[in-house]
Image 1 (cartoon, rainbow, N blue to C red):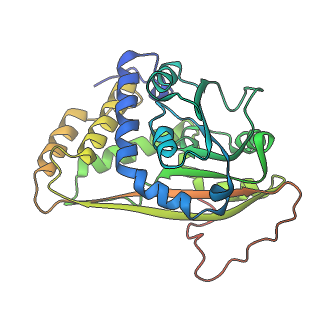
Image 2 (cartoon, one colour; image 1 turned 180 degrees about the horizontal axis):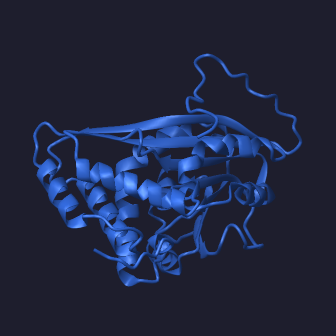
Length: 293
């Protein structure tokens, strides 16, 4: 057990091992989620109109590079506070129409203007959404939009169950809540945005990514392993990590195993002049999550 707790080290890539683990996890997530996220984007009018895309917290740049391959009509800029991950992005992916730079979205005053903002697996690690909205409103063109994608651990499901792995998810959620992160308060984002000038919630919906086993050697297992490694290496909380890995290995061989990863997609449109009519909420509205959490 690690008795030295470092709650903010989960994102610290100055440690070489942490940088490698994040690089692996980010790439695996893209391979697993890309098709579903692209389908989501294609259903957003603001994405279809956008010409300049800003990816906040772009990590190693792999996701943005895949978007660039699929749509070269847009210009893409990825930013991240991690110098290590941005260095990887520049080395592997930078080219005309696809640029990366190290900066802090919440404090840097030289942010590029854009038509569309991506925040993938970023808001969960923040504690101040008002500042996110304020910074976004300064760089986003009128009529643009901001898409937030987060993991929905409560909606995700593995069968047969893995009690230790499920307990680790709960311990992580509790640790994030303890230090005030927004991960457990995503339902409050709409109310926060409503108090800001020009923002409107267009949808808040689940994205299901189902798969069937056996999972040994799969990218699903690799994602789970890297996530366990990150939790252990960051030293945020104590847990029987070794036993959890053993449980995962046993589960990966089961013919009857199934998995459903759930993501939560939240899209805000930006209209500072208020000329856009509010979208009426219908009974079959895609805003399926409660307004508060």
